[in-house]
Structure formats: structure tokens, C-alpha cells
Amino acid sequence: MSGFARLSSGVGGPSYRFLWRSRVVVTRLDAEGVPTYEQIDSVSFTDFALVAVADLTFLRVENPGRSVRDLLNALETLVGMGFTVKPVIFDKGRPSTVFRSVDALKLVGLKVVGAVMADDLVARMEFVSKEGMVVENMTFLNDLKYKVEHAVFEVLLGGLKGKIAFAANGTVKISGQLAPKLVGLVEQDLHLFV
Image (cartoon, rainbow, N blue to C red; front, side):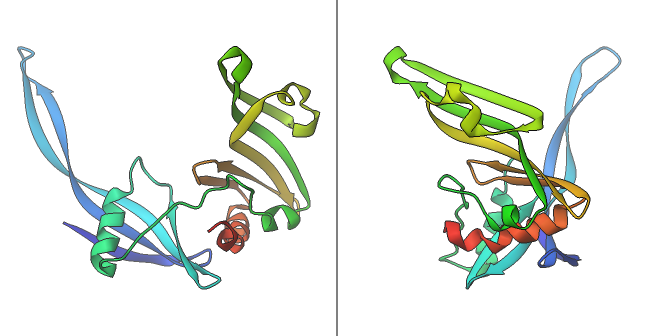
């Protein structure tokens, strides 16, 4: 059993909540320590929004759990055959409107994965700085073929702070006082990555 509820209008339009019933198995121990198993009904939910940008519709899942399969299956049932979803990934760039629209920006976290073929090595490196980093000044990365897995930026706009993190798999995490503004700015560029 599952269903949808409309939430109050948020950034970029209305948000929705998908609710579904799930079962959790609980183990109870009696006085002698003998386990008994019991199923308890639970209600899970996922909040999401449908965002229209440049004749395309994007599904923004807010605070996703480990899987959004139940939500996608329910949407397919509503929309019908032909419904497909694919993640927007930032492997060839990043949304630039957000970076042009802020007063100050600094890279505070970076996770890279690379390979040194001559030595048959795989490198996983994570860097964090409160002061900010400039990748071009990190000379030890010059001889390494690497892919950015995760990048975290701290942004400042009108005296308010926020953080935006991009992952190679398409996940974007936004936090801080600027979160609603940053979400809107990222969504403006989504059509460039399809």
C-alpha cells in the first residue's frame, strides 16, 4: 500500500511526499534469552519535486534513502509505460550559474580517484581545507590521471553562507542558509547535462 501527498510549495514549485508501507522484523528475547521474531508494519516516506527546465522535467529527490526504487515504481505505475529516469551526472563539468551568482567561493573538500599505470597502483585521496584549495596548485596531482569523485564548495552571498557538494554519481548536497537559493541556481543548469 502506498500513496502521494502534496507538501507546501518550496523552491521551484510544489513538493510531494511518497509514502509506502514497509515491514520491519524485530527480534525479542524472552526471560530465558530465547529469540522470537515479529513483523511490525512501518510507514516510510521520500520527499521529491518535479522541476521543469528548458522543456525537460527533472525529478529532484530530497534527502534520499538508500533506494528510491519504491518511488520510481510508483511513478511508473502512474505515468505508464515509457517512463524512464536517468541520473544527471557532472563528469564533464559542473553547473556554472551557481558559481557566477555568488559573492565568494572556495573549494573546501576534494576526493579524487586515480591510477598510476606504470606502478599498477590505484590512488584514493581526500583533501579538506578550511581556508580553501586551488587544484592547479596541488602539483602532486599533475602526474596522476584522476577523476574527481566528490567536491565541496563553501559559498558566500549577501553575508549568508552555504555549502554545495557535487558527487560524480549525480548527487548534489546543499546545506546552510543559502540552501533554497543554491537549489534554484543548480536547477537552472540541469538541462546542459542531459
